[in-house]
Amino acid sequence: MSNPPPLAPPLLAIEDLRVDYGAVRAVHGVSLHVAAGEVVALLGANGAGKSTILRTISGLLRPRAGQVQLDGAPIHRLPPARIVRLGIAHSPEGRRVFGNLTVAENLRLGATSRPDRDKVPADRERMYDLFPILRERMHQVAGTLSGGEQQMLALARALMAAPRLLLLDEPSLGIAPLIVRSIFATLGELKRQGTTMLLVEQNINVALGLADRAYVLRTGEVSLTGSATELRDNYERVAEAYLGARQ
Amino acid sequence: MSPGLYIAQQIINGVSLGSLYALVAIGLSLVFGILRMTNFAHGDMMMVGAFGALTLGAAGVPFELALLGGIAIGALTGVIVERVAYRPVRGAADVTLLLTSLAVTYILENLGILLFTSSPHDFPIPEWLDSSYEFSDGQITFTQVNVLTVVLTGISLSLLGWFVTRTDMGLGMRAAAEDMQAANLVGLDVNKLIVVAFALASGFAGLAGVLWAAQAGVVEPSMGFTPLLKAFVAAIIGGFGSIAGALLGGYLLGALEVFIVAFLPSELSPYRDAIVFSLLIAFLLFRPYGLLRTTREVKL
Ligand SMILES: Nc1ncnc2c1ncn2[C@@H]1O[C@H](COP(=O)(O)OP(=O)(O)OP(=O)(O)O)[C@@H](O)[C@H]1O
Ligand SMILES: [Mg+2]
Image (tube, rainbow over all chains, first blue to last red; front, top):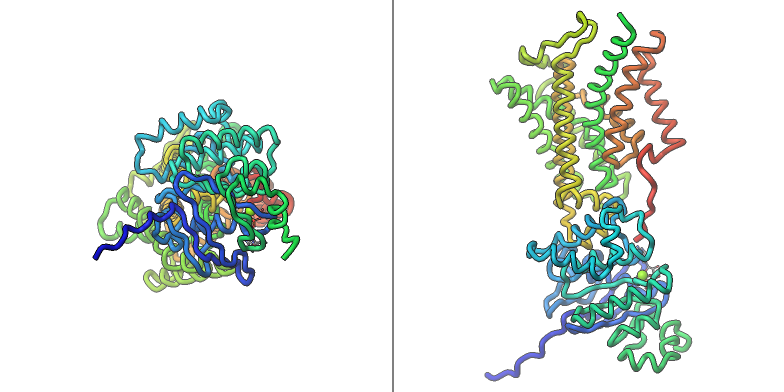
Protein backbone atom coordinates (compact mmCIF):
# COMPACT_ATOMS: atom_id res chain seq x y z
CA MET A 1 0.00 0.00 0.00
CA SER A 2 1.25 3.46 -0.78
CA ASN A 3 -0.70 6.03 1.15
CA PRO A 4 0.32 9.63 0.57
CA PRO A 5 2.18 10.97 3.60
CA PRO A 6 -0.29 12.75 5.94
CA LEU A 7 -0.11 16.54 6.14
CA ALA A 8 1.68 17.58 9.30
CA PRO A 9 -0.97 18.60 11.83
CA PRO A 10 -0.90 22.23 13.01
CA LEU A 11 0.73 22.94 16.34
CA LEU A 12 -2.64 23.68 17.93
CA ALA A 13 -5.99 22.56 16.57
CA ILE A 14 -9.35 23.12 18.21
CA GLU A 15 -12.30 21.22 16.79
CA ASP A 16 -15.96 21.93 17.44
CA LEU A 17 -15.23 23.00 20.99
CA ARG A 18 -18.14 23.44 23.41
CA VAL A 19 -17.59 24.72 26.92
CA ASP A 20 -20.20 25.38 29.62
CA TYR A 21 -20.15 27.07 33.00
CA GLY A 22 -22.79 25.02 34.77
CA ALA A 23 -25.94 25.67 32.76
CA VAL A 24 -24.44 28.62 30.90
CA ARG A 25 -22.96 27.78 27.52
CA ALA A 26 -19.94 30.00 26.89
CA VAL A 27 -18.43 28.46 23.75
CA HIS A 28 -20.54 26.63 21.18
CA GLY A 29 -18.75 24.79 18.45
CA VAL A 30 -15.55 26.73 17.83
CA SER A 31 -12.88 25.37 15.50
CA LEU A 32 -9.56 27.09 14.95
CA HIS A 33 -5.91 26.29 14.48
CA VAL A 34 -2.49 27.83 14.98
CA ALA A 35 0.47 26.68 12.90
CA ALA A 36 4.01 26.73 14.27
CA GLY A 37 5.53 30.19 13.86
CA GLU A 38 2.18 31.89 13.41
CA VAL A 39 0.64 34.66 15.47
CA VAL A 40 -3.13 34.27 15.54
CA ALA A 41 -5.47 36.82 17.09
CA LEU A 42 -8.76 35.91 18.73
CA LEU A 43 -10.97 38.97 18.79
CA GLY A 44 -14.40 39.60 20.23
CA ALA A 45 -16.48 41.73 22.55
CA ASN A 46 -16.91 41.29 26.30
CA GLY A 47 -18.24 37.86 27.14
CA ALA A 48 -17.69 36.45 23.64
CA GLY A 49 -15.87 33.44 25.10
CA LYS A 50 -12.23 34.30 24.33
CA SER A 51 -10.85 33.66 27.80
CA THR A 52 -12.95 30.54 28.10
CA ILE A 53 -11.20 29.11 25.04
CA LEU A 54 -7.74 29.91 26.43
CA ARG A 55 -8.62 28.42 29.82
CA THR A 56 -9.82 25.27 28.11
CA ILE A 57 -6.59 24.98 26.10
CA SER A 58 -4.63 25.27 29.37
CA GLY A 59 -6.71 22.59 31.06
CA LEU A 60 -8.36 24.83 33.66
CA LEU A 61 -11.73 23.99 32.11
CA ARG A 62 -12.95 20.72 30.60
CA PRO A 63 -14.87 20.96 27.32
CA ARG A 64 -18.39 19.55 27.13
CA ALA A 65 -17.62 18.38 23.61
CA GLY A 66 -14.98 18.78 20.94
CA GLN A 67 -11.22 18.51 21.03
CA VAL A 68 -8.05 20.43 21.71
CA GLN A 69 -5.04 18.91 19.96
CA LEU A 70 -1.37 19.68 20.20
CA ASP A 71 0.62 18.26 17.28
CA GLY A 72 -2.45 16.18 16.48
CA ALA A 73 -2.68 14.56 19.93
CA PRO A 74 -5.63 15.36 22.19
CA ILE A 75 -4.74 17.32 25.34
CA HIS A 76 -8.15 18.39 26.64
CA ARG A 77 -8.27 15.78 29.37
CA LEU A 78 -4.81 16.51 30.76
CA PRO A 79 -4.21 18.48 33.98
CA PRO A 80 -2.81 22.03 33.58
CA ALA A 81 0.65 21.11 34.85
CA ARG A 82 1.01 18.47 32.09
CA ILE A 83 -0.11 20.92 29.44
CA VAL A 84 2.55 23.42 30.51
CA ARG A 85 5.12 20.64 30.26
CA LEU A 86 3.95 19.89 26.74
CA GLY A 87 4.88 23.46 25.83
CA ILE A 88 1.84 25.72 26.25
CA ALA A 89 2.33 28.76 28.50
CA HIS A 90 -0.51 31.11 29.36
CA SER A 91 -0.29 34.74 30.38
CA PRO A 92 -3.76 35.16 31.89
CA GLU A 93 -6.29 37.97 31.74
CA GLY A 94 -5.71 40.48 34.52
CA ARG A 95 -2.01 39.50 34.71
CA ARG A 96 -2.32 37.39 37.85
CA VAL A 97 1.30 37.77 38.92
CA PHE A 98 2.11 36.45 42.40
CA GLY A 99 1.91 39.74 44.27
CA ASN A 100 3.52 38.47 47.48
CA LEU A 101 6.57 37.15 45.65
CA THR A 102 9.39 39.16 44.14
CA VAL A 103 9.87 39.69 40.43
CA ALA A 104 12.77 37.21 40.46
CA GLU A 105 10.68 34.62 42.32
CA ASN A 106 7.82 35.02 39.83
CA LEU A 107 10.25 34.32 37.00
CA ARG A 108 11.70 31.37 38.89
CA LEU A 109 8.23 29.82 39.22
CA GLY A 110 7.62 30.42 35.54
CA ALA A 111 10.45 27.97 34.86
CA THR A 112 9.46 25.25 37.37
CA SER A 113 8.03 23.05 34.66
CA ARG A 114 11.26 22.88 32.65
CA PRO A 115 13.46 19.83 32.48
CA ASP A 116 16.40 21.82 31.04
CA ARG A 117 17.36 23.56 34.29
CA ASP A 118 20.77 24.57 32.97
CA LYS A 119 19.21 26.89 30.38
CA VAL A 120 17.09 28.77 32.90
CA PRO A 121 19.68 31.40 33.96
CA ALA A 122 20.33 32.44 30.36
CA ASP A 123 16.60 32.75 29.71
CA ARG A 124 16.18 34.84 32.83
CA GLU A 125 18.86 37.20 31.52
CA ARG A 126 17.04 37.32 28.19
CA MET A 127 13.83 38.36 30.01
CA TYR A 128 15.68 41.10 31.84
CA ASP A 129 17.10 42.30 28.51
CA LEU A 130 13.66 42.20 26.95
CA PHE A 131 12.10 44.11 29.87
CA PRO A 132 14.90 46.15 31.52
CA ILE A 133 12.47 47.58 34.09
CA LEU A 134 12.06 44.07 35.51
CA ARG A 135 15.80 43.87 36.12
CA GLU A 136 15.60 47.10 38.09
CA ARG A 137 12.67 45.74 40.10
CA MET A 138 14.11 42.23 40.46
CA HIS A 139 13.95 42.12 44.26
CA GLN A 140 10.74 44.08 44.56
CA VAL A 141 7.51 42.32 45.51
CA ALA A 142 5.37 42.02 42.37
CA GLY A 143 2.31 43.51 44.08
CA THR A 144 4.08 46.87 44.18
CA LEU A 145 4.63 47.07 40.40
CA SER A 146 2.52 49.27 38.14
CA GLY A 147 -0.07 47.63 35.89
CA GLY A 148 2.19 47.83 32.85
CA GLU A 149 5.13 46.36 34.74
CA GLN A 150 2.94 43.55 36.04
CA GLN A 151 1.88 42.81 32.47
CA MET A 152 5.51 42.60 31.43
CA LEU A 153 6.18 40.28 34.35
CA ALA A 154 3.19 38.08 33.45
CA LEU A 155 4.55 37.85 29.93
CA ALA A 156 8.10 37.14 31.06
CA ARG A 157 6.86 34.54 33.56
CA ALA A 158 5.05 32.71 30.75
CA LEU A 159 8.12 32.95 28.50
CA MET A 160 10.30 31.44 31.23
CA ALA A 161 8.57 28.13 30.49
CA ALA A 162 10.25 28.28 27.05
CA PRO A 163 6.87 27.53 25.46
CA ARG A 164 6.20 26.28 21.94
CA LEU A 165 2.89 28.11 22.08
CA LEU A 166 2.24 31.29 24.03
CA LEU A 167 -1.35 32.12 25.01
CA LEU A 168 -1.87 35.82 25.72
CA ASP A 169 -5.11 37.03 27.24
CA GLU A 170 -5.62 40.77 26.69
CA PRO A 171 -2.10 42.05 27.38
CA SER A 172 -3.32 45.59 26.66
CA LEU A 173 -6.10 45.53 29.25
CA GLY A 174 -6.07 48.57 31.53
CA ILE A 175 -2.60 49.73 30.48
CA ALA A 176 -1.50 53.16 29.29
CA PRO A 177 -1.25 53.42 25.47
CA LEU A 178 2.47 54.14 25.55
CA ILE A 179 3.18 50.96 27.51
CA VAL A 180 0.84 48.99 25.25
CA ARG A 181 2.95 50.10 22.31
CA SER A 182 6.14 49.04 24.05
CA ILE A 183 4.71 45.64 25.01
CA PHE A 184 3.52 45.01 21.47
CA ALA A 185 6.90 46.05 20.11
CA THR A 186 8.40 43.33 22.31
CA LEU A 187 5.79 40.84 21.10
CA GLY A 188 6.76 41.77 17.54
CA GLU A 189 10.38 41.04 18.41
CA LEU A 190 9.37 37.64 19.83
CA LYS A 191 7.40 36.94 16.68
CA ARG A 192 10.46 37.63 14.54
CA GLN A 193 12.37 35.17 16.72
CA GLY A 194 9.74 32.57 15.82
CA THR A 195 7.50 32.45 18.91
CA THR A 196 4.05 31.05 18.14
CA MET A 197 1.21 32.96 19.77
CA LEU A 198 -2.53 32.86 20.21
CA LEU A 199 -3.43 36.39 21.19
CA VAL A 200 -6.77 37.35 22.71
CA GLU A 201 -7.50 41.06 22.37
CA GLN A 202 -10.29 43.61 22.39
CA ASN A 203 -7.94 46.20 20.98
CA ILE A 204 -8.44 45.30 17.31
CA ASN A 205 -5.84 47.66 15.89
CA VAL A 206 -2.85 46.55 17.92
CA ALA A 207 -3.87 42.91 17.57
CA LEU A 208 -4.19 43.04 13.78
CA GLY A 209 -0.92 44.96 13.65
CA LEU A 210 0.87 41.98 15.15
CA ALA A 211 -1.09 38.95 13.97
CA ASP A 212 -0.84 36.95 10.75
CA ARG A 213 -4.43 35.75 10.95
CA ALA A 214 -7.44 36.40 13.14
CA TYR A 215 -10.71 34.88 14.25
CA VAL A 216 -13.57 37.06 15.42
CA LEU A 217 -15.73 35.52 18.08
CA ARG A 218 -19.30 36.50 18.86
CA THR A 219 -21.32 34.90 21.68
CA GLY A 220 -19.28 31.75 21.64
CA GLU A 221 -19.08 31.24 17.87
CA VAL A 222 -16.59 32.21 15.18
CA SER A 223 -18.31 34.93 13.15
CA LEU A 224 -15.43 35.90 10.88
CA THR A 225 -11.95 34.71 10.06
CA GLY A 226 -9.23 35.78 7.67
CA SER A 227 -5.73 37.09 7.29
CA ALA A 228 -4.84 40.15 9.33
CA THR A 229 -4.32 42.23 6.17
CA GLU A 230 -7.74 41.25 4.86
CA LEU A 231 -9.41 42.13 8.12
CA ARG A 232 -7.55 45.43 8.45
CA ASP A 233 -8.93 46.45 5.06
CA ASN A 234 -12.47 45.46 6.05
CA TYR A 235 -12.79 47.18 9.35
CA GLU A 236 -16.57 47.43 8.97
CA ARG A 237 -17.00 43.72 8.54
CA VAL A 238 -14.89 43.13 11.64
CA ALA A 239 -17.01 45.54 13.67
CA GLU A 240 -20.12 43.84 12.39
CA ALA A 241 -18.80 40.38 13.22
CA TYR A 242 -17.91 41.72 16.64
CA LEU A 243 -21.24 43.13 17.56
CA GLY A 244 -23.57 41.12 15.40
CA ALA A 245 -25.14 44.17 13.75
CA ARG A 246 -26.60 41.96 11.03
CA GLN A 247 -27.52 38.30 11.21
CA MET B 1 10.53 38.72 94.48
CA SER B 2 11.69 41.71 92.48
CA PRO B 3 9.28 42.90 89.77
CA GLY B 4 11.96 42.66 87.10
CA LEU B 5 12.56 39.00 87.74
CA TYR B 6 8.84 38.35 87.99
CA ILE B 7 8.30 39.93 84.57
CA ALA B 8 11.22 37.97 83.13
CA GLN B 9 9.66 34.75 84.40
CA GLN B 10 6.32 35.64 82.82
CA ILE B 11 8.00 36.38 79.50
CA ILE B 12 9.61 32.94 79.58
CA ASN B 13 6.22 31.37 80.25
CA GLY B 14 4.57 33.43 77.54
CA VAL B 15 7.18 32.53 74.93
CA SER B 16 6.86 28.86 75.76
CA LEU B 17 3.06 28.85 75.52
CA GLY B 18 3.17 31.09 72.48
CA SER B 19 5.49 28.64 70.73
CA LEU B 20 2.89 25.91 71.00
CA TYR B 21 0.12 28.18 69.75
CA ALA B 22 2.33 29.34 66.90
CA LEU B 23 3.16 25.75 65.86
CA VAL B 24 -0.52 24.83 65.71
CA ALA B 25 -1.68 28.11 64.19
CA ILE B 26 0.89 27.95 61.39
CA GLY B 27 -0.48 24.56 60.38
CA LEU B 28 -4.02 25.93 60.27
CA SER B 29 -2.79 28.81 58.15
CA LEU B 30 -0.77 26.64 55.75
CA VAL B 31 -3.82 24.53 54.98
CA PHE B 32 -6.20 27.46 54.88
CA GLY B 33 -3.84 29.38 52.63
CA ILE B 34 -3.79 26.74 49.93
CA LEU B 35 -7.29 25.22 50.26
CA ARG B 36 -9.32 28.08 51.76
CA MET B 37 -10.54 25.56 54.27
CA THR B 38 -10.57 25.65 58.06
CA ASN B 39 -9.33 22.24 59.06
CA PHE B 40 -11.10 21.51 62.34
CA ALA B 41 -9.38 18.15 62.49
CA HIS B 42 -6.03 19.93 62.83
CA GLY B 43 -6.10 19.75 66.65
CA ASP B 44 -6.49 16.00 66.44
CA MET B 45 -3.11 15.72 64.74
CA MET B 46 -1.72 16.88 68.10
CA MET B 47 -3.55 14.04 69.77
CA VAL B 48 -2.39 11.55 67.17
CA GLY B 49 1.22 12.71 67.50
CA ALA B 50 1.12 12.58 71.29
CA PHE B 51 -0.43 9.10 71.40
CA GLY B 52 2.01 8.00 68.73
CA ALA B 53 4.93 9.12 70.86
CA LEU B 54 3.34 7.57 73.97
CA THR B 55 2.93 4.22 72.22
CA LEU B 56 6.47 4.28 70.88
CA GLY B 57 7.75 5.20 74.34
CA ALA B 58 5.82 2.33 75.90
CA ALA B 59 7.43 0.01 73.37
CA GLY B 60 10.84 1.05 74.66
CA VAL B 61 11.77 3.65 72.05
CA PRO B 62 13.84 6.46 73.63
CA PHE B 63 12.00 9.78 74.07
CA GLU B 64 14.03 11.66 71.44
CA LEU B 65 13.10 9.11 68.77
CA ALA B 66 9.52 8.79 70.02
CA LEU B 67 9.20 12.56 69.58
CA LEU B 68 10.37 12.32 65.98
CA GLY B 69 7.99 9.39 65.58
CA GLY B 70 5.12 11.54 66.90
CA ILE B 71 5.92 14.18 64.29
CA ALA B 72 6.02 11.56 61.53
CA ILE B 73 2.79 9.92 62.65
CA GLY B 74 1.06 13.31 62.79
CA ALA B 75 2.31 14.16 59.28
CA LEU B 76 1.28 10.80 57.90
CA THR B 77 -2.19 11.05 59.42
CA GLY B 78 -2.62 14.49 57.90
CA VAL B 79 -1.64 13.21 54.46
CA ILE B 80 -4.02 10.26 54.75
CA VAL B 81 -6.89 12.47 55.90
CA GLU B 82 -6.30 14.82 52.95
CA ARG B 83 -6.28 11.95 50.49
CA VAL B 84 -9.24 10.03 51.88
CA ALA B 85 -11.54 12.74 53.23
CA TYR B 86 -10.74 16.16 51.78
CA ARG B 87 -9.63 15.53 48.22
CA PRO B 88 -12.90 13.86 47.19
CA VAL B 89 -14.88 16.92 48.29
CA ARG B 90 -12.42 19.53 47.04
CA GLY B 91 -14.21 22.18 45.04
CA ALA B 92 -17.50 21.48 46.80
CA ALA B 93 -19.26 24.21 48.77
CA ASP B 94 -17.35 25.61 51.77
CA VAL B 95 -19.88 24.14 54.17
CA THR B 96 -19.20 20.65 52.77
CA LEU B 97 -15.49 20.98 53.54
CA LEU B 98 -16.30 22.31 56.98
CA LEU B 99 -18.63 19.42 57.78
CA THR B 100 -16.11 16.95 56.41
CA SER B 101 -13.42 18.26 58.72
CA LEU B 102 -15.82 18.07 61.68
CA ALA B 103 -16.58 14.48 60.73
CA VAL B 104 -12.85 13.71 60.59
CA THR B 105 -12.46 15.19 64.09
CA TYR B 106 -15.25 13.01 65.35
CA ILE B 107 -13.82 9.88 63.76
CA LEU B 108 -10.25 10.49 64.99
CA GLU B 109 -11.31 11.28 68.55
CA ASN B 110 -13.52 8.22 68.70
CA LEU B 111 -10.72 6.14 67.29
CA GLY B 112 -8.56 7.53 70.08
CA ILE B 113 -11.20 6.58 72.67
CA LEU B 114 -11.52 3.11 71.16
CA LEU B 115 -7.79 2.51 71.31
CA PHE B 116 -6.87 4.33 74.51
CA THR B 117 -10.20 4.92 76.37
CA SER B 118 -11.37 8.44 77.09
CA SER B 119 -9.51 8.82 80.39
CA PRO B 120 -6.17 10.63 80.52
CA HIS B 121 -2.96 8.60 80.27
CA ASP B 122 0.22 9.56 82.03
CA PHE B 123 2.80 10.84 79.57
CA PRO B 124 6.17 9.81 80.96
CA ILE B 125 9.13 12.03 80.16
CA PRO B 126 12.78 11.14 80.62
CA GLU B 127 14.66 12.38 83.65
CA TRP B 128 16.74 14.96 81.79
CA LEU B 129 13.55 16.61 80.63
CA ASP B 130 11.99 16.62 84.07
CA SER B 131 14.44 19.13 85.51
CA SER B 132 14.80 22.86 85.37
CA TYR B 133 17.39 25.62 85.32
CA GLU B 134 17.14 28.07 88.16
CA PHE B 135 18.54 31.57 88.29
CA SER B 136 18.63 34.23 90.99
CA ASP B 137 18.08 31.73 93.78
CA GLY B 138 15.15 30.06 92.08
CA GLN B 139 13.29 33.24 91.33
CA ILE B 140 13.51 32.49 87.61
CA THR B 141 13.00 28.94 86.41
CA PHE B 142 13.31 27.51 82.96
CA THR B 143 11.87 24.05 82.96
CA GLN B 144 13.63 21.78 80.51
CA VAL B 145 10.30 21.24 78.77
CA ASN B 146 10.00 24.99 78.23
CA VAL B 147 13.51 25.15 76.82
CA LEU B 148 12.87 22.15 74.57
CA THR B 149 9.60 23.70 73.35
CA VAL B 150 11.22 26.99 72.45
CA VAL B 151 14.27 25.39 70.83
CA LEU B 152 12.30 22.89 68.74
CA THR B 153 9.81 25.54 67.71
CA GLY B 154 12.69 27.79 66.69
CA ILE B 155 14.25 25.02 64.61
CA SER B 156 10.95 24.08 62.97
CA LEU B 157 10.07 27.65 62.13
CA SER B 158 13.53 28.33 60.71
CA LEU B 159 13.23 25.28 58.49
CA LEU B 160 9.77 26.40 57.40
CA GLY B 161 11.08 29.89 56.71
CA TRP B 162 13.88 28.46 54.58
CA PHE B 163 11.41 26.20 52.78
CA VAL B 164 8.93 28.91 51.81
CA THR B 165 11.55 31.45 50.71
CA ARG B 166 14.31 29.36 49.15
CA THR B 167 12.82 26.28 47.51
CA ASP B 168 10.73 26.01 44.36
CA MET B 169 8.18 23.98 46.22
CA GLY B 170 7.89 26.45 49.10
CA LEU B 171 7.60 29.40 46.73
CA GLY B 172 5.06 27.38 44.78
CA MET B 173 3.05 26.82 47.92
CA ARG B 174 2.90 30.55 48.58
CA ALA B 175 2.01 31.16 44.96
CA ALA B 176 -0.80 28.61 45.09
CA ALA B 177 -2.07 30.14 48.33
CA GLU B 178 -2.26 33.48 46.59
CA ASP B 179 -3.73 32.39 43.26
CA MET B 180 -4.44 28.73 42.65
CA GLN B 181 -5.26 29.14 38.97
CA ALA B 182 -2.17 31.16 38.18
CA ALA B 183 -0.16 28.49 40.01
CA ASN B 184 -1.74 25.90 37.72
CA LEU B 185 -0.84 28.00 34.72
CA VAL B 186 2.86 28.11 35.53
CA GLY B 187 2.79 24.33 35.73
CA LEU B 188 2.92 23.80 39.48
CA ASP B 189 1.52 20.44 40.54
CA VAL B 190 -1.06 21.76 42.95
CA ASN B 191 -2.07 18.33 44.26
CA LYS B 192 1.49 17.71 45.32
CA LEU B 193 1.70 21.12 47.00
CA ILE B 194 -1.48 20.39 48.95
CA VAL B 195 -0.08 17.07 50.16
CA VAL B 196 3.12 18.79 51.27
CA ALA B 197 1.11 21.50 53.04
CA PHE B 198 -0.83 18.86 54.97
CA ALA B 199 2.33 16.94 55.82
CA LEU B 200 4.04 20.07 57.16
CA ALA B 201 0.98 21.34 59.02
CA SER B 202 0.24 17.98 60.60
CA GLY B 203 3.89 17.32 61.41
CA PHE B 204 3.99 20.65 63.27
CA ALA B 205 0.79 19.69 65.07
CA GLY B 206 2.31 16.32 65.97
CA LEU B 207 5.33 18.10 67.45
CA ALA B 208 3.06 20.51 69.34
CA GLY B 209 1.07 17.53 70.63
CA VAL B 210 4.14 15.80 72.05
CA LEU B 211 5.40 19.02 73.65
CA TRP B 212 1.94 19.81 75.01
CA ALA B 213 1.72 16.32 76.54
CA ALA B 214 5.23 16.68 77.96
CA GLN B 215 4.21 19.94 79.65
CA ALA B 216 0.87 18.65 80.91
CA GLY B 217 2.14 15.20 81.81
CA VAL B 218 -0.98 13.57 80.37
CA VAL B 219 -2.56 12.71 77.02
CA GLU B 220 -6.22 12.14 76.22
CA PRO B 221 -8.23 11.83 73.00
CA SER B 222 -9.86 15.25 73.37
CA MET B 223 -6.58 17.05 74.11
CA GLY B 224 -6.50 18.80 70.71
CA PHE B 225 -9.70 20.73 71.19
CA THR B 226 -8.58 23.65 73.35
CA PRO B 227 -5.27 24.24 71.55
CA LEU B 228 -7.14 24.17 68.24
CA LEU B 229 -9.49 26.93 69.40
CA LYS B 230 -6.56 28.95 70.71
CA ALA B 231 -4.61 28.46 67.50
CA PHE B 232 -7.66 29.54 65.59
CA VAL B 233 -7.76 32.78 67.60
CA ALA B 234 -4.02 33.23 67.05
CA ALA B 235 -4.38 32.73 63.30
CA ILE B 236 -7.26 35.21 63.12
CA ILE B 237 -5.33 37.82 65.10
CA GLY B 238 -2.35 37.51 62.78
CA GLY B 239 -4.36 37.24 59.57
CA PHE B 240 -5.83 33.91 58.54
CA GLY B 241 -3.78 32.19 55.88
CA SER B 242 -0.60 34.16 56.56
CA ILE B 243 2.34 32.19 57.96
CA ALA B 244 4.00 35.23 59.53
CA GLY B 245 0.60 36.26 60.87
CA ALA B 246 0.07 32.90 62.57
CA LEU B 247 3.51 33.16 64.13
CA LEU B 248 2.85 36.66 65.43
CA GLY B 249 -0.66 35.75 66.59
CA GLY B 250 0.60 32.66 68.40
CA TYR B 251 3.19 34.55 70.41
CA LEU B 252 0.86 37.47 71.10
CA LEU B 253 -1.82 35.12 72.36
CA GLY B 254 0.63 33.16 74.52
CA ALA B 255 1.92 36.39 76.05
CA LEU B 256 -1.59 37.71 76.56
CA GLU B 257 -2.80 34.60 78.37
CA VAL B 258 0.19 34.50 80.65
CA PHE B 259 -0.03 38.20 81.38
CA ILE B 260 -3.74 38.11 82.13
CA VAL B 261 -3.07 35.59 84.86
CA ALA B 262 0.14 37.20 86.08
CA PHE B 263 -0.68 40.88 86.11
CA LEU B 264 -4.44 41.32 86.33
CA PRO B 265 -6.26 40.96 89.64
CA SER B 266 -6.52 37.30 90.50
CA GLU B 267 -10.31 37.42 90.40
CA LEU B 268 -9.99 37.84 86.63
CA SER B 269 -7.83 34.75 86.07
CA PRO B 270 -10.77 32.34 85.65
CA TYR B 271 -12.01 34.57 82.84
CA ARG B 272 -8.84 34.15 80.82
CA ASP B 273 -10.47 32.16 78.04
CA ALA B 274 -13.49 34.46 78.00
CA ILE B 275 -11.15 37.42 77.48
CA VAL B 276 -9.31 35.58 74.72
CA PHE B 277 -12.48 34.71 72.87
CA SER B 278 -13.79 38.25 73.26
CA LEU B 279 -10.61 39.31 71.52
CA LEU B 280 -11.43 36.90 68.72
CA ILE B 281 -14.88 38.44 68.31
CA ALA B 282 -13.39 41.92 68.37
CA PHE B 283 -10.96 40.98 65.59
CA LEU B 284 -13.64 39.32 63.53
CA LEU B 285 -15.77 42.45 63.83
CA PHE B 286 -13.19 45.17 63.42
CA ARG B 287 -10.20 43.64 61.70
CA PRO B 288 -11.31 40.41 60.03
CA TYR B 289 -8.13 40.17 57.98
CA GLY B 290 -5.95 40.30 61.07
CA LEU B 291 -2.79 42.25 61.69
CA LEU B 292 -0.72 41.14 58.73
CA ARG B 293 -2.98 39.98 55.97
CA THR B 294 -4.15 42.47 53.39
CA THR B 295 -7.21 41.92 51.28
CA ARG B 296 -6.70 41.11 47.66
CA GLU B 297 -9.64 40.20 45.52
CA VAL B 298 -8.74 37.62 42.91
CA LYS B 299 -11.02 37.51 39.92
CA LEU B 300 -11.10 34.62 37.48
N1 LIG C 1 -16.63 31.55 36.02
C1 LIG C 1 -17.72 31.73 35.25
N2 LIG C 1 -18.93 31.27 35.65
C2 LIG C 1 -20.03 31.44 34.88
N3 LIG C 1 -20.03 32.07 33.71
C3 LIG C 1 -18.85 32.55 33.26
C4 LIG C 1 -17.64 32.41 34.01
N4 LIG C 1 -16.64 33.00 33.32
C5 LIG C 1 -17.20 33.48 32.20
N5 LIG C 1 -18.52 33.22 32.16
C6 LIG C 1 -19.45 33.56 31.07
O1 LIG C 1 -19.02 32.92 29.90
C7 LIG C 1 -19.11 33.80 28.78
C8 LIG C 1 -17.76 33.96 28.13
O2 LIG C 1 -16.86 34.57 29.05
P1 LIG C 1 -15.33 34.83 28.74
O3 LIG C 1 -14.69 35.27 29.99
O4 LIG C 1 -14.77 33.67 28.04
O5 LIG C 1 -15.45 36.06 27.74
P2 LIG C 1 -14.30 36.94 27.12
O6 LIG C 1 -14.50 36.90 25.65
O7 LIG C 1 -12.99 36.57 27.62
O8 LIG C 1 -14.71 38.39 27.64
P3 LIG C 1 -13.79 39.60 28.15
O9 LIG C 1 -13.31 40.30 26.93
O10 LIG C 1 -14.72 40.43 28.95
O11 LIG C 1 -12.69 39.02 28.95
C9 LIG C 1 -19.69 35.11 29.32
O12 LIG C 1 -21.07 35.10 29.08
C10 LIG C 1 -19.41 35.05 30.78
O13 LIG C 1 -20.41 35.73 31.50
MG1 LIG D 1 -11.63 37.45 28.80
